[in-house]
Length: 191
Image (cartoon, rainbow, N blue to C red; front, side, top):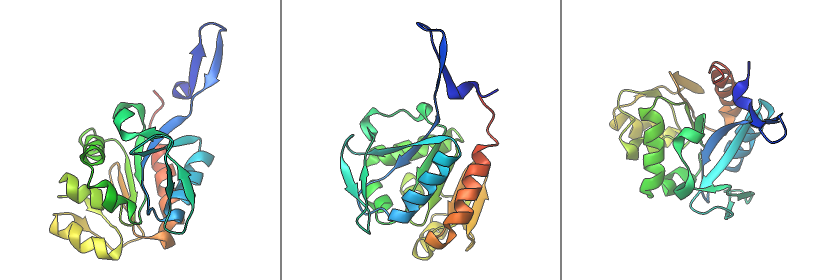
């Protein structure tokens, strides 16, 4: 039974489809393809990626010029409204980790052992949040050493899974990353 995908409209006695929401924290400088391709894979698998930034309605720009519309402000979101957190790479994670609200949001997912998916520079947020220590992960080559200094167990592999934490290195690994995150989400029982 997929009860979490439906909501009863009491006034009409009908069901409305409610997709499972995935929080996507992002700002200017995101690596375009590291947002567009995983987002498309999530949508095709029946999930609703919600872009979260500093202001709802803000237009941000990827490194290659793609425009993205921010759906919700970090000030207005609650971790419990989302099934998982996705952090695409590029310059975006470095900018986000300067804002404590994004750091706290990421920490809360880790503390509650909720799924977190990060690619390329995404794991930089784990360093700032102090949650990398002891975790198995990967990241973009230049971030791997920083993760090691923060106590992470780093592997230079396309995808590294450590329970609900799934990380990947770069755009060349996106297909494997997408497959891993969708496969993991399908293991979560309907509520």
